[in-house]
Amino acid sequence: MSDAKTSALVMIDRRVTLKWLIAGAMAVGQLAACGDQAKGISWPEVAAIKAQGIGVDPDLINPVVPWPLTLTAAELVTAADLADLILPAEGNSPAPSKVGVPAFINEWVSAPYPDQHEDRQLVIPGLAWLDTESKTRNGVIFANADVSAQKLILDDIAFKDKVKPGLEMPAKFFNRFRSLTLGAFYTTREGWAEIGYMGNTPGTGDYPGPTPEALAHIKGVIEGMGLTYTAP
Amino acid sequence: MDTVGSSVNAYFPQLEGRPRYNEDGAMGLHAYIPFWDYKGVKDGTAGTPRGYHVEIGGSFGDPGMGVGSGLDGYGSSLRADVNRRYGSRINFTQRGEMIPNAKVVLRDRYQHQRQVRHPGAEILLRLVRARAEPGHALPEAMKELIDKLGGTLIGEPAEPAKAISKGGEIIHEVGAARMGKDAKDSVVNQFGKSWDVDNLYLTDGSVFASKAHKNPTLTIMALAMRSSENIAARLRSGEL
Image 1 (cartoon, rainbow over the protein chains, first blue to last red):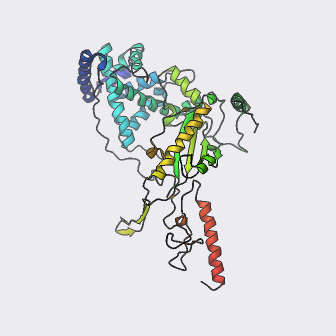
Image 2: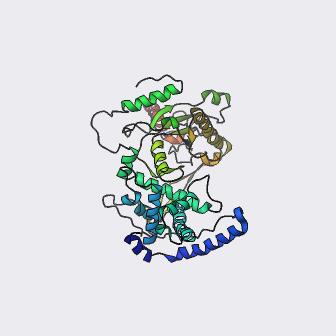
Image 3: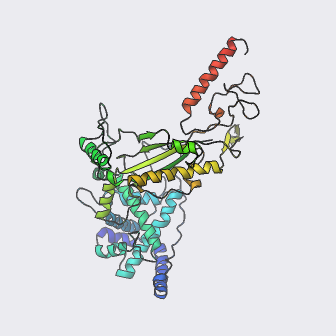
């Protein structure tokens, strides 16, 4: 556990986690009583953000985010850990937490719009659930658990055909958080470099079109379907 | 009226791992099918009363927030899925003809802003069977095509009433003063001249009798040219 994580924990927002501790305890009881028939767990309501939006005709030269960022330091630590588990650093690609993905998610779920509120309604209780679940299983919050222990929790919610009965809402949260993480990461320069997006760049002369390799690939696809390929 | 619109997206495994290149220079629409299932429309078996066209597109575009949609799991395999799938998505956009019905209404609606009364219009496009049908037939036809090509749909098309775009979304709003051959059931004659007022011509999209699947601007210009020639001829003859 890094020093940054330790200091962030001091600022943990107890309001949501307390609700979760209660909900989690009830869920455990239900599981014991009902076996595999557990109906899932309740999901706390998160208050809607009331703040100014971007509005019309914003200053695009000096962009600002007019709404306050609302994730706590502890939530940001959990979000960073989760994003880095979703897309760990690999080869030349940095971890999401190194390219501002947690900050992006903070801005996203703090935005005063209906779609973002729907995501907020998943993300904030979801991050709290990770802590509650980790405490139940490992005795420590999610960010302080070993990577292997973190992954065991994800294995119960990350695969759509293998969601542990009762964990449908955490699975829904994870699905949405994964989308946000991927969207945030692959819209960075680092994400572009990895995925191979080569546009958004000035060029001179005629547009060169597909490379010979790309044309050869398409030729293979077309001929593979029993059709005749005509070179452009 | 507005053009009836619908859209279906699919991934094609054949396109996975395409060698990368800058595809920003290619427009989103790579192929255009000017009329789909002409025979079916003619026979009445197409499930849509009039024709529609299909616009086909997809590219190595700048990744957006949907880059991870439909993916599963986490870690290295997820990263591999994102990379493998990039550039293998094709969107099939359909545009069909809308026929007016009794529930399509244009009415005056004044807006009050800063104590000033601004004239405006409110267009009410209500769903009737004839408008709902193409909303069903269009995605179904594309599903069949995608299936034959070995693609995987990205999400099932919504139920018919929701699969089609809302009135105004295709931004082809026309009609309300239709052209016709008789003052009983139309507002203007074949030259855009009002039946009621001899020197009043309408030269915009209001005279359309239906909303075809194509963009209306060139038709509006052609009709305006036709109106102009008629006005000029009548001026020369002293009739106007």
